[in-house]
Length: 136
Image 1: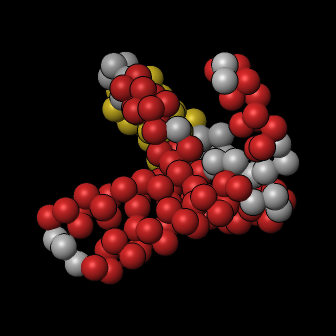
Image 2: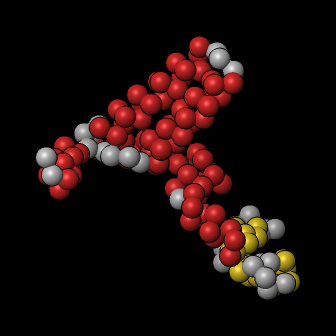
């Protein structure tokens, strides 16, 4: 079977299915972390929880109820708070942290991105209009 034929068959199989989303990726990474911990601390329940997370992630990925999985994923991502960028795009977040710094408005808590290496900068909050200073 040629590689193109296999790719086409996989695409046909996945058509109309949810596919991997952020919640599935988190389940998989947590399961892998539990497996690594299990190598050092052999507790039977760690392997059971890891297996359950992997099965749940595959079930989500192969589910045909795309709207329900999208709602679940959005609720999950909403509860993550400041970890949301790390889950959505870990490499992009690392790249951004090297080139920008995030300042928080003292009045409303809005997070503002400023370029690194500019020294002391004066920033105006887009949400409340407060002007404050910070180091970049």
